[in-house]
Structures are given as C-alpha cells and as structure tokens.
Amino acid sequence: MSDYGSNGPGARGNTDWRDEGETFDPWRNPELFQGVLTKRVFAFLIDLVVLSIPVILAIIFITVFGVITLGLGWMLFWIVSPASVIWALIYYGASLGGPHSATLGMRAMGIEMATWTGEPGYFVLGVVHAFLFWLSVSMLTPLVLLVGLFNGRSRLLHDILLGTVVINSMAAAPQPARSY
Image (cartoon, rainbow, N blue to C red; front, top):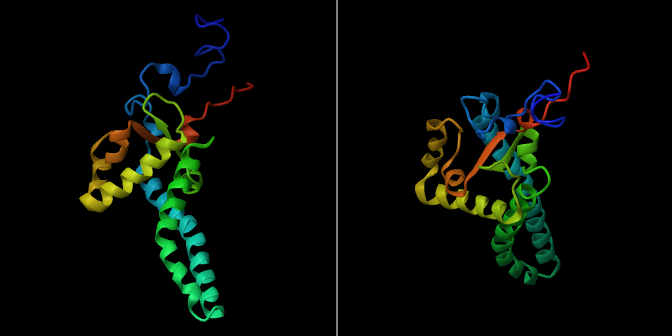
C-alpha cells in the first residue's frame, strides 16, 4: 500500500499528470502538448465545415423559398448573418462546455480544452473562447496565431487571456492498470 492510500498516485503502479503537483507542465509532461498546434489547425478546418453546413442549407432554403414566393422570401437573407454568429457561439459553447470539452473537430483530432487548473470547460467559457479567438484574429491579423509557437504549452493569445490550455486528450486520459 502506498503513502497515499489505495486510490492515490502510484497505488496501481501508474501516475497521472494531474498527480504531479504542477498542472500542465510541458517539461514534465511533453506528451500533453506534442503536435497540439497542428491538430488545432485541422480541428478548426473541420469545425468550419460543421458550422457551414447548416448555413448553406439555410441559404438554399431561402433561395428556393424566394423563387416560390416570387421574390418575397428573399427578404429573409438578412437573417443569415446574425443567425450564423448565434449558431457558431452556441456550437462552441455547447461543445467546449460539454462532457468532452472539445468541438467535433477537436475530438476528431484528439485534443481537448481545459482550464489552467485542470477543470473541464463550461458553456460561457466556450462562448467567450470562440468570441476572443475571432476578435483577436480579426483585429490583430492571423499573425497573432504565431504566439503559440513561442511558448511551451502551445497556447494562443485567447487561451492566455482566459486561462485555458489545449492538450492531447489521449495523453490526458488516465492509463488503465496493467494486468501483468
């Protein structure tokens, strides 16, 4: 039996990164941050496809509705922009605040978002995270994304402002005890 009781670190011969005192240390746990920036780029592209599908379907519906109503239905096009923004914020809030703390693209790439202290994300954090990302990229040009290349945790500007970190979800998952 270890000094930590039956459920403490080392009880089954394995240690979790959360048990080591310093949360998200790139020197002690480099596997948490390996390839995260590349995975974030591809996750972003996947999320753009996921976000654009309902918007494209709405545009097709409004176009067909406008033809059927002899042009009156085309007055609904003004709704597309605000609805797209609301849809994106709900998507990011629900997925980053969900049980996986990751969007569909992030889950496909094997990464997740957590707070600096290791807690999973929540709805408001997901919404603010997406809003600050788009605000920083639109105001400071996409070159602001280079911030991730110059820190050990691969954090972007909006991650630093919000106190979040994106990690490899497979490396963060507790490893099962070995039977041999």
